[in-house]
Length: 112
Length: 119
Image (cartoon, rainbow over all chains, first blue to last red; front, side):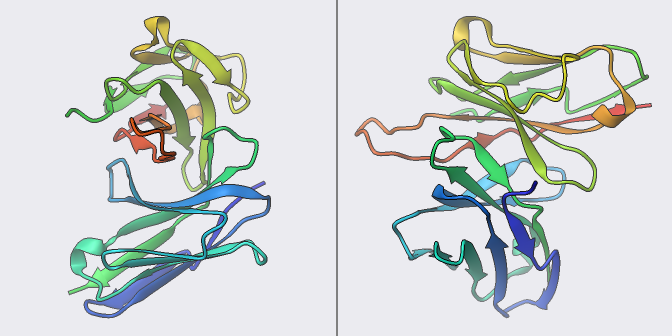
């Protein structure tokens, strides 16, 4: 069964707006990571948040983690057309080495 | 520094044929992973090499799939014989779990994937 489930599956916003994507997972984790995939390209690592962290920032990205609810959110502020891509959360389980378990992804479209 | 490279970028074969996908990880990365995304489904783990050893191959779907990493450098994933349900994008990723300072990094570096179409 899927470890990470993302919500929404698709999101369309105007340039300049904020985009929020949510991820839920099922088992205990070591860390949670967010990746981006532009159409036809590989996955690019955006940010990693450890299980003992609650919030992390990187540029226009803000990630939160709530281990009690087994959920995470990715906020992209002041979105740009270039942010159009699919975004995936992926978890590393406590006894899973460095194996990532991916969610289904959110397709984000930012309209200029 | 070169990233993870995969070859071929796209392969179209007929059911029953054999295909071999290749992945060249980032130089010096001991960890190499294969993932695949079947159309409309999530990205799923296939296996993990640490150098030339298979650390975890729990995600390999069946014995038609064979992965190797001789010498601990590049890796190949062979599908023989290919079936229709094998169609999808096969991603390779590499990582060096810890930085030179010993800090845990956790980041995987992905290639652009090999798209396999089985007709």
